[in-house]
Image 1 (cartoon, one colour):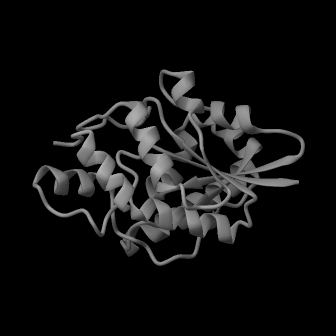
Image 2 (cartoon, rainbow, N blue to C red):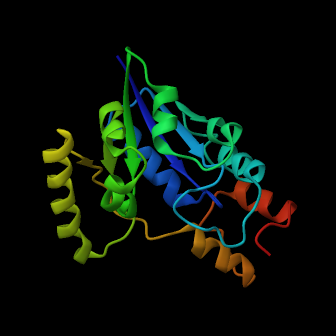
Image 3 (spheres, rainbow, N blue to C red):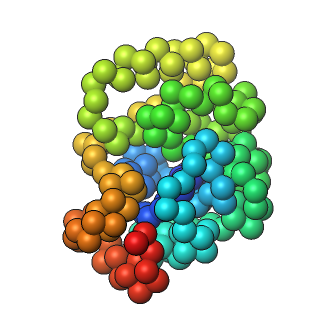
Length: 200
């Protein structure tokens, strides 16, 4: 049984928090392969300062190039339109595969409002990671996980890692202000952003 992780997102741009989350996900879920999948068009949020899917894909390839077992996939970009998780899971599922879906805080709290949540739980094992230290949402997450277990018959597991409080929005704002992003993104990503005049 091949253990496959799925890490989707806008990745505009990919940053050090994304890389830390991917590493923890791979290690703690004993993944054989991790698919990093930039969305074509995210269905749940509008992007400020949008850049093309091609740029986001290229930045992901640079950001994750040093991680063994990580494959940056263009499947959602090639599919086009709004990117729905359930469609990606269908595409990646197979008898000899066990799929693990990485969720952030927002996603784990709203997973039952995504397209076809029952099938998402049927096809994968959702796992969540905290990228913020706000303790007030912990009880809401625990309650939601209990609801999911009762409704869909699967426990949502937690990745145990010290949160890196960093977002793509913070990176974009720093770039707009002309501030250094050296501690936020890999050097190759920073250079790509500069060379292609993104987020300015």
